[in-house]
Amino acid sequence: MKPANMAVVLVAAGRGVRAGFETPKQYQALAGMPVATRTLDALARLLPDALIVPVIHPADQVLFDAAARRSRARNLHAAVAGGATRQVSVLAGLKVLHEEMRSDIIVLIHDVARPFLTEQIILRGLNAAAVDGASVPALPVADALKTVDAGGVLTGVIDRGSARVVQTPQIFRLGLIYDAHLRAEAAGLTDFADDAAVAAWAGHPVSTFAGDPDNVKLTTREDFALAEARLLSELSDI
Ligand code: CTP
Ligand code: MG
Image 1 (tube, rainbow, N blue to C red):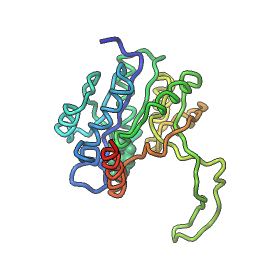
Image 2 (cartoon, rainbow, N blue to C red):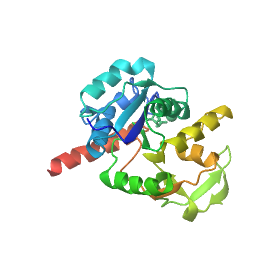
Image 3 (spheres, rainbow, N blue to C red):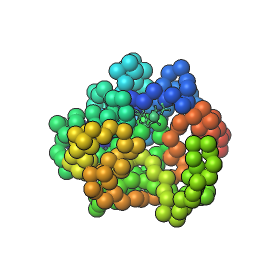
Image 4 (cartoon, helix red, strand yellow):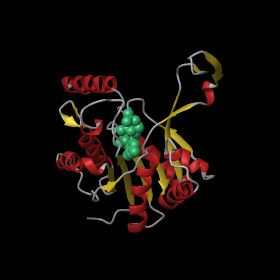
């Protein structure tokens, strides 16, 4: 096996509360195959040489092992225990990479709940991150954006032109994002929504590249139903 010059932190320690299945959503079958298996397969296909560091909930070890065994991923690190927030889970994965790899490698931080990443996203993202050191997939917003008060009454307007929906994989030079995470942790901040926010808080410019509307994060049961319908219709097209 070639020594990896790239790595993936695959965050999978969430509980999937909004999806509300009996098992966390990443181990739920989507058209017959667990979401985590699908995401591992996509990563193995698109980044065959990258070391994948899965970050899981300790209670899910058996479920994760079963999903990983069904996948084609071969360059898989032993699973690392995540924490109470996504940010804490990411840092657990970055710590392992910091100990085992050079700080100038590129790391992709990816939600296991996004099994539909594409070659185009990876190519655009690696190009952008090679230049900028920090780059994230983003989409323009089609609908009008407003703010509301606690009662749901409109209070203002957000400029749609400068708004973006941000996805994963978010791509960084390891040293940059590891240091940013360590500083956030030391400042007592542990609930940034994503790694772009951690990097920006630490003062790093974060560039964007084009994401893909199909690269959805499976969040609710409705997302599962839509994704399943899409997969089955793709199958029937063949
Ligand atoms: N995640 C994690 N550790 C946490 C929380 C989230 O590794 N403490 C991961 C999830 O497994 C997921 C990604 O971060 O792959 C994005 O989080 P989200 O979609 O919110 O998943 P969950 O937190 O599992 O879902 P919910 O918020 O509905 O409980
Ligand atoms: Mg969550």
